[in-house]
Length: 389
Image (cartoon, rainbow, N blue to C red; front, side):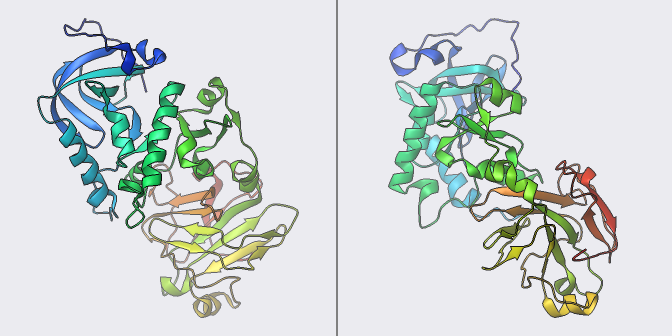
């Protein structure tokens, strides 16, 4: 978030009673404003600008979205959860409501929105949204420790009460940032820390940190500046060194449903048991069956159809029955641990920005060098499919 310094003074400035905010927050800007209307569950519009912004994004929370992109399946993001969060906020902040805005150290984001904790009298509206199950805690450094711990407690209350996005009968299928990434063909880009252990993992391994303990950093340097150290065990470092997606055959000759396959490579010096590991594209997930292992320095071929694969390549795949239908005009594929921690990722045909690797019918994309993994499109080439080699 880039801080924008205003060159003009606001007319209406008021100090919030210190009883409703913590000491660190009190050091930030405090302003009065009037609600124009609620835009969504964590965003409101103001009747008059504050710090040059008439849009306010609530700090410390992330509510389900109310938009969909390019006709993609929204799951249950919008209905019921996004709409429920929006309607809840409308019930608290109808047009004309007088509010107090308390900003953090960074007051305005890259979209020109004021970033603030919102108070209606003594009511912390951000916290109320969390406690009623309409949001997930979402703190991006720098933030106040006391505020994080307070909001974490509010979210745990909602989780324990099974309300809103935590309702066991219809829980939120994707976290809001996961949904945004899918809508815009992006992938996680923030480093994720565990507030209590003071360790961080790389963006793709965010699921290793319990959801209630997560804090976010724009860069690795930010995490280190905040006193966090890298968790380079398991999926945070070692797993991505041991297992790689090696080859993707997504536009097969003949029938895609018969010929498509993925290939996983074991870079380690030991046999790895990857039972229950997950292959996931933009639409489906596939769990590798019990007893699936890869010997050191060997490949595991995972195909959609054993007989169709055999007719093309003259031998049977290691695993068949994969239900991923790899898009011929673009898709993304990830390899994950059974707990959902991402180990490796590849995209093609610009499904994710920058991943422009493209294969023609009958060609595969493959990793150029298993000893050089930069987690970028530069690792990949196009050529004749060579499963198991």
